[in-house]
Length: 227
Ligand code: SF4
Ligand code: SF4
Image (cartoon, rainbow, N blue to C red; front, side, top):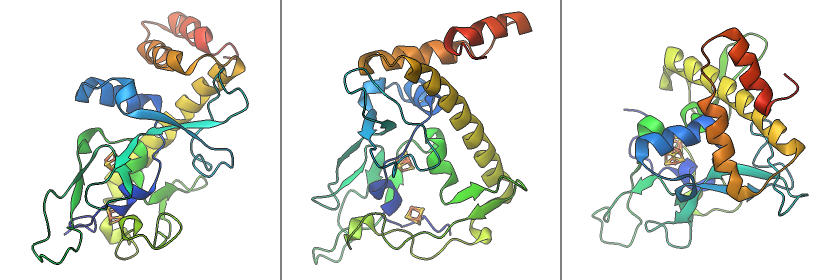
C-alpha cells in the first residue's frame, strides 16, 4: 500500500503549488478549464513559495511585487476553517465513528494531469550526480498544529518510490521549470497586465515545435530576444 493511500493529503492542503506553463496548458486542454478557473498569482515577497524552484513573475499593476503562479485554493469541507487545492477531492462522508472526527481520505481529482511539483514531492535531483534524493518532510506543512496541515505519517524511504518514474518525473520537472523560467524572464523585461499572461503563455508554447532549425531560431527570438 502506498504511503499516500488513506492519507488526508496534508500536502495538497498546506502548500501553494507552483505551476509551469506546460502544467497550465495541459490542465486547460485535458480538463476543459480556463486559466482563470485554477491559476492564481500568490504574492511572494520573502521568496518562501518560489524557493529555489519557481520564478517570480511581475505585472504592471503592482510592478514591485514578486508573484508565483500557483494552483488556487478553496475552503475545505472536511476541515472547516482551512483551505485545500481546488483539485483535491475530499472524502465525502464521515469516517463512520460518529464522533465528529474529520473523515480520512482524499485524492487528487486530476491525478494524470497533476503539475510536476506534485509528481516529484518529496524528492529532488542532485545536480552533480543526477541521482534523486528524498528530503525530510516536516510534521506540519504550515506553522501551528492544525490537523489538516499535518503531513506524511512517516518519512519517505527509497522503497516508497519507483526509481525509474521518479527520476523521469524529476527530469521533466527540471526541464519544464527551466523553460518556464526563461520565458518569465522575457516577460519580466517589460511586464504586462495579469490579464494578458494566459495569451502570452499560449503563444509561446504553441511555438515549441517548429518545422526546421531556422524557423526555431526565429520563433525563439519572438519571446526571448537574448537567444
Ligand atoms: S493538483 Fe492534485 S496532487 Fe497537486 S496539490 Fe492539487 S490535489 Fe494535490
Ligand atoms: S501528506 Fe505525504 S503521505 Fe499524505 S498524500 Fe501528501 S505526500 Fe502522501
